Length: 325
Image 1 (cartoon, rainbow, N blue to C red):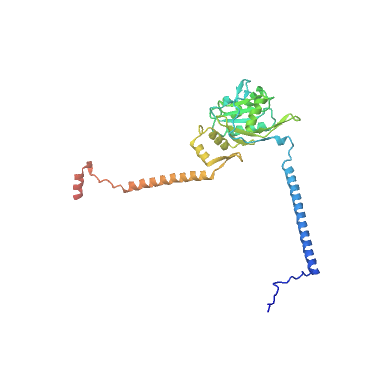
Image 2 (cartoon, rainbow, N blue to C red):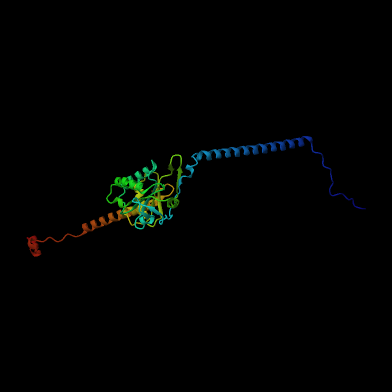
């Protein structure tokens, strides 16, 4: 007999999908498309709102007139000043900027002598601070003022110098204060080196500018910037000591420089916590060591035996006889 053969599988035609299932799938796909469309619309709306707010904030952040946007001071610490630049002193004599460098640190002031307000405030603040600082202009440091107005003349510089030397009230101050004028080329070189940007307003005949004083090393490198019209005497003293590389000042100044560091962002000296901790720890060790030495010496004196008593005339035999009787 031949065996019966059975097929391994049967091919069954796909049954048509029920209508209710097709409608359910279509509803799900429509809901998903709607959700994606709404999400994309919300994203576009959020992006548009953010761009609008950023544009508004950018406009609000700088509402200054176009001229004032070109005015400012950019710190350029360590930059060399143009010591070969030519100027005229308050007597009209030709001088080079480098004549006032080489021996002592220099406080540089960029101003113009016919300024109706800000420059006068800068000089007033500088004089007030220097009268508190223990150093003398002409001995420990120099003050060099340079006018950035090429229209200023030596007579303007001389009048400004007399006013502030008299206000400074230190003997020999005239030898330490210098007021210079110069041409546009030299002015451009020194202002560019210091990062000082200013703008002339033809309508008012005045300059728009920021205010600061600069401390430079004897070698002519910019060391410190102090903004505004008032300058802390402690900060100014520390800046001069630091710019001189320790050639002026006292040991106390060196300790303060260990505890205070110049912060370029704040343009002033702020406390260095670790430095203060180290100085405080060293002081505690010295005080404790001194106390222990004093106590040790006191104990030694107490433990020392008393000398034997002597009789009259210092005769030990006579003293022993008196004790027997």
